Image 1 (spheres, each protein chain N blue to C red):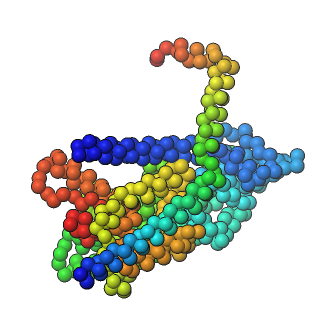
Image 2 (tube, rainbow over the protein chains, first blue to last red):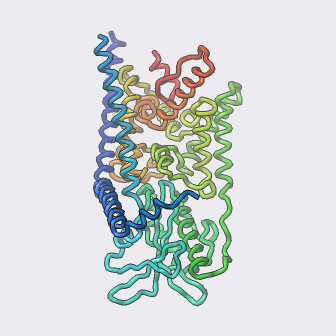
Image 3 (cartoon, rainbow over the protein chains, first blue to last red):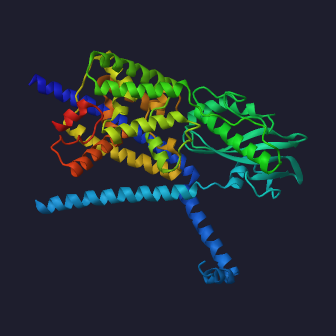
Length: 76
Length: 416
């Protein structure tokens, strides 16, 4: 009985320490997340992708011959 | 019963697929978002200056002319890129033409992936002031004409290499100067020999059971704590592993210690099937063992909690990796307290993670390793995978590999 009580106390204390640690680690993740939000990587990536696709659209519309010409180049 | 088993299995697979997909998405977004836009970076630091890319030479490095209030500045900005401890770094070098070539005026740090504490140390020590007034034909070599900052040696080396390469390239390509500078040699010295010796001794203490092995074990403990921990501060962390996937690999010439550490840790796991790093080389393990010796308290962890620790570490490292990949910044996800423990520098909540980890280790043996360490889990997973592959290829009735945990004690708990 004494042994069992001792074990319970030990389990509870070690679990409490683990939970405390877990809270702190999540705090660190939150801190990092807030830091990343300042840079807005998702918006930057979307902006870059749309800009690049718009640029490629413009260049293909402006000079369609280039594309046709490239396609027509026979294999060497 | 069967349908419950199928449902559980499916949910596990779905979660796993989601985890991999989100990691891939974070990686792609991070890589696209972190593509270098020199002009945007310079604009952040010099919003009032009009920048024009120099067309004098199309060769690298990229050079910008500056114009403020309608007047052309005699200074130009030379763009330079290098690799630091955490990943790539970008600096703008303000330089001015002189009769004998050009001289540097100022170094602008435009982007980096270094641990904020290291950068703070570099800035506090006025590291970049050393470059002011130097000629483009100078050597820019650490230990020669540039002094490294103690405790941030790799970062110092990264910036010096970036400046050196850009300036020398510019001197040859743009100014048509003949190279008169000294090329940097390999940094293979006493530090690298000490680390290799530590690994050799660690292997000896693992594979031999004689009296000498016992003393060697103590020697390795002291060596890893003093050298790997406090002197080199070269503990492996999740950021190092994630950095490999993002291509943040320092050159062996610039940072051989990184290569020795990676080869030793991964080599022992892949070739020998033994996690030598966690058991013998990790300085934080030594700190935890010492705390255990001091307190003499060995609280037990509930077996159920111990069993779930593997899933917990996977979950924590998934969050950490998403943050790292999204930001392309290894320091933003590495939640381990190692760097802080041995440099005593950290930011924000990191100041609380270290004491909590130490407090836990005071009462619970290998507290951090057993419940939170992602490096230990991944190295042990490679050992597991290796054993599984070996068993499949060669068969054999070897004992089943442990599911997780760093220490022998952990393995016993989990198997029991």
